[in-house]
Structure formats: C-alpha cells, structure tokens
Amino acid sequence: MENNLIPFDPDSDKVLEKLEADQAAGLELNAEQENLLKELQGIRAEAGAALKAYHVFDTDRKWAEFKQQIAAEDTVQEKNHQPISLWLRISAAAAAIFIIAGIGLVFQKTSQQPQQSANVFLNDIPAGKQSATLTLDNGQKIVLSGAGNGQVTKESGIVISKSADGQLQYRVGAQDVEASSKIHTLSTGNGETYRLQLPDHTEIWLNSASSIKFPASFDGLKDRKVELKGEAYFEIAQDKEHPFIVKTAQQEVQVLGTHFNINSDSDQQNTRTTLLEGSLRITNNVKKEQLIKPGEQSFVNEGTEILVSPADLKSTMAWKNGYFRFNGARIDEVMLKISRWYDLEVSYQGPITKERFSGNISRNKNISEVLNMLSYSKAVKFKVEGRRLTVMQ
Image 1 (cartoon, rainbow, N blue to C red):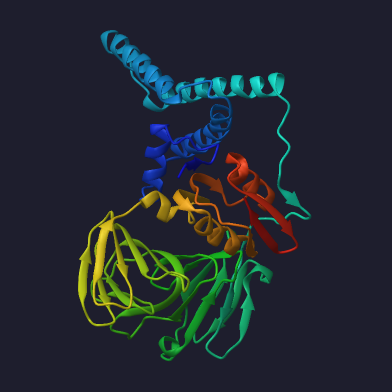
Image 2 (image 1 turned 180 degrees about the horizontal axis):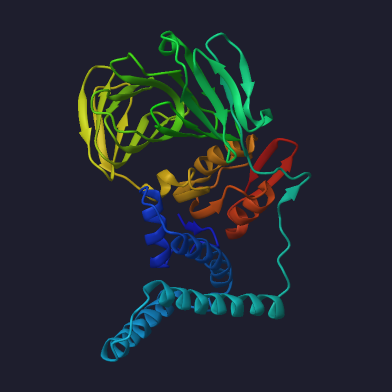
C-alpha cells in the first residue's frame, strides 16, 4: 500500500518543520520568523511539485550541502570576529532552494506538455469562511458574518463585540449579578470557523461543525465551565482559584493555565485531547482520571480506559494554522475533513482505494485546487457537481 505524498510537501526542510512546530506549540514568532515561515512554505510548495514530478533533485542532499556551506561560513566569520545572522543564512539557503524548484518548473514547461486532469468540475467551490452563530440566553440568534465590527449586543452588563479581525469578545461593563446565569452558545456549521475571547481573556478557536456553550460571565462561580461539541483549541487564562473545565459527551477536562486541543466530533469513536502546554486532568464518564503532559494525547471512548500516547502536534494544530495535514491518511479520512470544510456530500463510485496520503494543503484554496493535488498520484479522481463530490479510482 503506497503512501502518496501530496506533491508540494516533501517534508524535508528542517527549518520549516522547526518554525511550524514552534507555531503549533503556541510559541510567538517575531516578524522576521513569520515572514520566513510564509516564504519557506511557498518555496517548498513549488519545489515539492517539481521534485516529485521529475525526481530531478535530491532535496535532503541539497539541504545537507547548504548546512555544510553555512558551517564553513560560520568558521570563517568566527575567525574574522564577524557577527553571524542565522536567519539571514537560512533565507539565503531558502533562496537557493527556490532556484532549484524554478529549474524543475522550467523543465516541466519546456520538456513535457501538461497532463490533462481526469477530474471533472462542473462548478468550483470556495474555501470555508470565518463565521458562526451566537445564540443568547433568551434564544436570540446573531449570525456573526452579517454583523458589523464593534458592539454586537449587550446583556446583563456584558458587552459583546466583534473585532476587526473577526474575533467575538466579551467584556464586563456595569455587570448585573444575573450575568453568570445567562448561557450563550457559539456554533459553526460546515465550512465555518470562529474565534472567541471570554470575559476572563481565555481564547477559543472553534472548528467547523462545532459548538461551545458558556456563561456570559464567570463572576461568582467557583469554576469556569464550558461545554463543547466538535473540535476547539483553547488558550486558557490563568486563574488558580477558579479552575477551567471543558465538558464533552465522553469526558471532563480540568485545567489551570494551558494550551490544548479537544476533538469530540460525533463521527469519531473517541474524544481526543492534545496538550501543548501546561497540565490537564482527564475524567471519563466512569470517573476514571488521568493526567497528561505536554506533547501527549489522550483517547476517551465509552469504555473504562483512558489511553495516552505521544501526540502529532503538527497534524493536530493544522486546522487552526490554516492547513489540512495528512499523515498516512485513508481517502475516507481525507474526505471527512474536506467535506466538512467545503460543505460537500461525498459518495464513492467503485472500490475505495487503499492508498494512503501524506502532506499539507492550504484550507484557503478552492476545492478544484485541493482535489487536483490529491489526484496527482493517480490513485483517485474526482467529480464535483453542485455540492456533491464523487470519489473514483
């Protein structure tokens, strides 16, 4: 069973991996590092397509040569007592990789006609968007994509506003004592995602087809408790006197100050909790408890056990960082994520391929671009008609 690489992600650039890992772990990158990250992602996108198509270059060997060159330059600079700029050297190496990728692309254009795609697109579908619906305690619903920036509404002294970058923010004004009894729900449909900041400054990123229920204020409550359906990433504001608790259908997670992701999608057989920073106590429905450490992932189902294993942080955090990331995924696993983000109904014609897929794809691309990348290996082809996607071998 072949593991098909999505063409633009050969995954051999160690610098890019380090930057992505730091970003996924919640580490703050400076402006130079952020620009370099975007540059390398674009470079590797073009290089990956060229290298996989023609097998002209050994990228790992080239990268090893660049590192040897950098080490040699370091030695000269140290002898001459000259300052060494790591990011400048990496940028130079990245530029060289870009030249290699460019050669591969020129070779493609001059030596071979483009392949005709076997995919059929009767229409194209754009990527999902930043939107959600806020339901207040009184049942009023507010579609946030249609709401202007600034104050959206106000309830019991809690001011609810929408920031310029599309974040829903709760701020305590002249608060009513009843605010903590007002329960609000933020929900996303297929093809939607949204970001929320609670009154305690906890930040929550909500994935597609998910919802989170929370009190309008935590004041006067012994703990900060929310209920999640679907998937969300949390950055919890520290408050040792008031533990933060996330309840799902299969578990409760108790935290103090930490960064973590919970996936409790109904189509999954278990609830997966991935810890990036801090500490978590997982309690399942039969009251069994388990502590997990940063870099670990727990699996909870309807049984009595809580399983813990090392986490793939890059794959877990891909959705929040704007990517699909597949690591030996079956086509049905790939389609589950894609259908949810593009709001598609998926069907299969003929036998389902046993091939597996690895790589990154931006969630900002139209569906035609995504499917063309997936069909590069010729293991699958696709037909899009309206909101119906057919997968074929």
